[in-house]
Image (cartoon, rainbow, N blue to C red):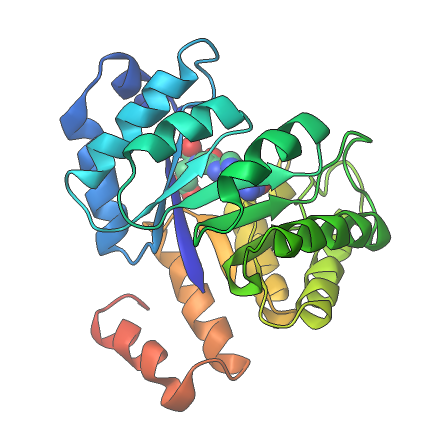
Length: 264
Ligand code: THG
């Protein structure tokens, strides 16, 4: 599982305040903690600061990269903010995300074309949110073909079928995991990723739903996730589920996690 650490997100109170105060140490601690807990990417999001988003996103990338080699996942719907952050990022970042929304697609594609940047392709279009498996597959197909035609290799694409709240529609959980399965089958070598905590929005005991949903998605092939890597139960669920579906030869990762006392 490719883990994208979700905690440096301005919509979280402490992070929003740290960004406004330009508190380097506070951001760096959250970056280091997530790297140490096994994050493969550090998501950075300054989305609540609409006017200053490019400036703040760039500052977040610089601040994070001063203390960790773990690359950033640059999380913004704004091509302008993404471009600003890319200017300063060293190594190979992840862009979170491109979508089929015309303005976003047209401005981001030339930046991504022919590069090795990892890219989350979010199943959203100008027609609104997808609801069914079929809606998601239609958007995924256009996004993946567009990216491949622009010389992005399939291994660098993470399709996000878009998790929506179960409290809104009883089928949203199932439609999501079935979309993951179809996408993984249809495009050999591709990845899938998602921010899965949306599933439990508006419901009690969110952690229970999030963890159970993660296991369901892993069974269908999900291999990337925007999660809190400091959540030990979630990380333990991921390691156990991946061992149980045969993605962990000799249970090596499971045993390693056990010895690091991550499974208790
Ligand atoms: N898809 C893509 N990108 C995304 C999302 C997605 N980026 C934003 C969001 N959705 C994923 N990121 C977050 C970040 C923080 C939280 C949820 C999703 C969050 N965190 C808890 C909090 O603030 O209390 C802390 C974590 C915990 O305690 O478990 O709510 O869908 N491509």
